[in-house]
Image (cartoon, rainbow, N blue to C red; front, side, top):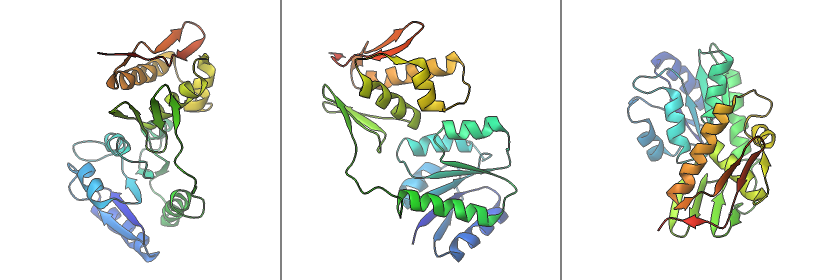
Length: 232
């Protein structure tokens, strides 16, 4: 039996989701304290999270980021916001799927089962944990973490993809086009969005004591130097 955590502030809708989920032999836990979503996630350890966007106190994007800081558990957004920017924002914050309201409950169940098969079932990989290592820095893509010496830094999904791209090609230059394709496929993003993500990676490296390792090659892309200049 799999556990599905339902983060939805409409009690009627949450109850209907619970009923449909449990009809297929899984357990559905409805969150009622919307100030303690992360704490409940850590306590329940669900296999999939259904997450609304419009929630009291903090929105679903915020809670998605908080969960992603700890786990790669599949997150499916369910929201009345049907615009492309809202769906892109959800994916940018670490969501695995997005379903717009009103929806057919059978579609929700099918998407839950798809994520369960992908992560835990028929399609899950059974290989050893993958790592990328350079000069003592170890990136764990599945955990979304990296470590150096005795320090560890927790990453977002985008930071993980960006660091893996830079580390795997280091010390070669990685073009802007390559990075944009890795992080956003064919979706248009402006230069500021890319710069924000690069700066976040610099901050993550700084958490491990690494300074001035990520070089901006103006007009071309970025290069990660792996002879680390460590903070004292």
